[in-house]
Structure formats: structure tokens, C-alpha cells
Length: 543
Image (cartoon, rainbow, N blue to C red):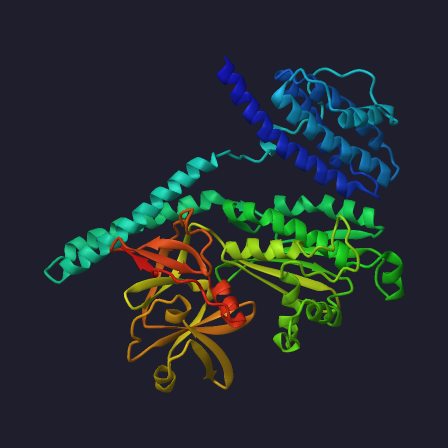
């Protein structure tokens, strides 16, 4: 019986998270407008469902709070616009319900915390509050056929399935080598059988990846309240526009996006948007706009946060950079100047507040995104304002990689970063060194020697190749001994001792059972441009 209760509690917690999120999103859209009956009914259904489920588990404090919330909602059924104070109170009610549910998890008989109890009293004192709890099912409950058919899947099980698929991919690589060797001795039938098996494995892999995909819309919509509350607090007016809500991405990538999006949205409202008076003087709408956009582009996920505010102050950024000891020649192009604000501790805010001023937010964004093998770029949007662009892989489990060799070591460069390959001129090879600049069709292309960057040692071959990669909107070259070609790569995490290796984002098992390291292109090029040498490594491939 206790096991059944634990299962019910887990299901209640999962469902209540979705219900409270939907209620919060609906409330934010009501502010300043005549509430639509459908919107009010949707919030009613959420509160009533929450109350009923809490009653089954004897979470009395949650039931009491949800009932008071329903009573206050009754006041929204009139024909008057919903004022800011009412929305603020109801949003505080949503927060109080979250707190009450958290307390009930620990002790279902515990009283409400003082702050939550205060919200309860405010809800009861507000016009329209009910005096007793109604009984029975809500008359406006949604018919079953109108509800989305969804299935909750334990992420741990998905990860296990994905790990099995990864092992199949490794085994496939080994089998390919064995069958290729056997084909030379009349193994055509074996190769044909393998082709059928490979198609099945590819279908399984595709299905597993699709199960992990989730739309980005729910994550985007959570920031409606962030924009609303922060603008109200700063004396500004702002709206949030969402584009590409149906774009899907891996659930692991989505989880890593939460913190960066919070920092970028808060930054757009705080640093980007001007107060209403300043916007009117500049000929703008007094209500600023923050846009969250998602799209797929060339096998990658692109997330953009735009605002129509004052834009980046180039002079202020350079002045702050000089104060921090950065030489003026280190940032000559606009793109390089704007990237400076991503550095740790960098801020142009004159005063430190609880919202900004310490130069931490965008540094968190950069570190989190680069940890996902992604990139962050800042630029001015057409017509004024700032645009922050995140480019991320669609999944963290399997990537298309380009394999290269340096001596006996093999490295993998993500295909999303590869632009083209070319031969290193003989004069450059003869001169040696750690890198230099090439003339690529009339453009200067800085390049580095991967052998020297990782201190691999050993003699260079008579002929070297350069892999041209993109980073932060620019391009650079990576000189290697040999190009091994493109191959699908199953990413394996590094162990605790190697998780903080610079310029390395993971590892992969090759068909021969050896290990190749996956290059973090953005970190490698950034460190090379700064003149930082990567620490000594045993090599990109180990036994």
C-alpha cells in the first residue's frame, strides 16, 4: 500500500509541475486585457485538478490554498480588464502552491509556511473569494478527446536505451572492418547481410533519438513571467514574443538551456530595454519587445534572444576593457568587441544591483553553451537593439564527426564546425612552428598545429593538411597529419580526472577499440588566439 502511495505521489508531483506552469503562463497573458472565458476556464481547470489530486493524497494545506485560489479566480469572470495587482496576487498564489506542495512532500500534515499563509489570507480577503469548497467535478472540465495523448518516460530508461544503441554503433564499426577484410576473399554475401542489419540499427537509433526530442515551446513560455516581473520591478514595460515554439531538441540539451536563457532574458530587459519615457523620446513604442526564437539550421539548433532597446555601447565596452588591462589592438572588429562582454567579470553597468553589475550572467551563458559544444555570438540587430545567438548540437549523444590523425593519435572534430579541408603549403611545413596565417582565396586564415597545441611530440610528416573550422562567426585552420574522413561518433563522457581538460569535450570509441578525443573547437581556437598553450596530453588516442 505504501508503494502505491509513493507512485501516486510521484505522479502528482509530475502533473502538478505541468499544471502550475500552464496556469502561470495563462495568467501572464491576461494582464491588462479583458479575460477570455476560455483562458479563465483553463486556469480554473488547473486549480481544480490540483485540488482534487491533493485531496486524494490528503495534502490538506494544498487543498485549502487551491480552493482560495479558485475563489479569487471567480472575480475574473467579469467584463473588466485584469489589473496588474490582481495578476501579481494570482502569480504569488501559484508560487505559494509550489511551496505548499514541496512542504507536503516532507510532511502532509505540516502547516503552511508564514509567507505562504500570508498569500492564503490575501487570496481569501480579495473580492470574489469563496467561503466554502464546492464538491463534485468541475462543469467545465475538458473532454478526454481534447487532451493531448502523452506518455511519461523515465529519462534514466531512455539513457540506458541510448547507451545500448551506442554500443551497437561501436560493434557495427568493428563488424564493418571485419567484413571489409572478408570481402576480398569472397565475402559478398556477408556484406549484403550486414547491409540489412545496418538499416535496422539505423532505424532503432533514429527512433530512440526521436523519443528524446521535446518541443522548446514550454521552456520559452516560462519566461513570460520573467519578463513581466522584471520589467515591473525596474519600472519598464515589456512584452515577450515567441517564435519557433514547435522546434524540437534533445531533452538533455533542453535541460542545459534553462540557466543560459534565464540570464539572457534578464539581461535583455535590464541592459537592453530603456524606460518608457526614454523610448518615447527616441520615437519608439513605450513597450519594449524581447524576442525568443528557435530554428533548425544545417543540422544545428539556433536559439536567439533579441531586444529592441538601446543596443551595445561599443565605446563603453572598450573603455571597460582598457580598465581591465586589455590592449586596444586585441579587439578591433565589432564582433570581437561585442564578444568581450562574455568574459568573466565583465560588465558595463555603473552600479551593482541584485539584477546585474557583477559580470557573471553572460559568462555563465558562454561556459554552459561551450560545454555543450555550442557557440555564442553577440551583434546589433537591424533597427537597434541586441541579438544573442546560440548555436547548439541537436543531441549530446551522437554526432557526425570528422576524424583526423596526428602521429599515432586520432582526434574527432564535430562536423558542424568543419568548413573545408586543404593542403598545407610546403613552405609552411618546412618552417615548422606552432602555427601562422594562410592566404585562403585572398583572405587571411589563422591556423594552429594540433601537434604543438597538445604537445604530442614526434616528427611532422612530409605532407600536412588543414581543416578549416568556424568559431564565433569567424574561421581558423587546424593543421593535422592526416585526414581520416567523416564518421558517426558516439560520445562518451570523460572520467572525473579528465573532465576539465581544456579544448576537449568528450571521447569516442573507434572501431578498433581504441579511444579518440573529441576536440572542443571554440575553446581550442580561443586559447590559441590568446597565446595560451594547452597542457601536455598523452595523446588523442589511447589503448
